[in-house]
Image 1 (tube, rainbow, N blue to C red):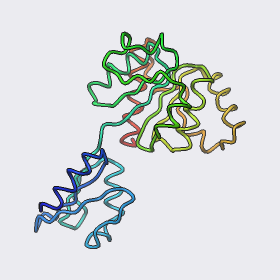
Image 2: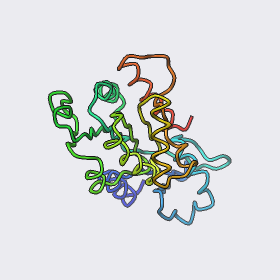
Image 3: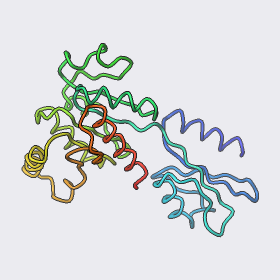
Length: 226
């Protein structure tokens, strides 16, 4: 790998950008793939295979070629709306998975360093925070408050920015009401299908740790698009 490629990789890591390294196993020449950037002319014909590998997080050799794709990702960011008990349990599990967690809740009594030690806490309304910090396609949103004044804007923002995972806590009736509010705000039926509600895989659990596990399991399943 030449010095120019190494310097570009260091720059991508510094700027927290996901990328792939494509290496020709016959001559050891390497190329970089970054979403929304032009590929090197020598490998453009393999773009669909490279993008597919990147999206599926699958390191592999492109069929009938000496090209090997290796993908590199920044920790997945999870924005949790609501400093509730389930959020505490999500954080415990997330530490093992190296996720980057943000707790957003304007209620300072709940969103405190005492309850969430070592966690990035934002004591603001989601509307104010997301006007300053853009949520991205590679990010996940988990809405847990049941309070439309806190949850709804965050969910709308996640839909607009096409987050790969959007989950919202609540019963089926609560979710129906939530969907109706979103429709009233102009969101289409197809967009609303992106929301996981009630949230989490159906593992059968009911306790806060079990619900947290079901949420994290669902997020992981979406990361790998299984």
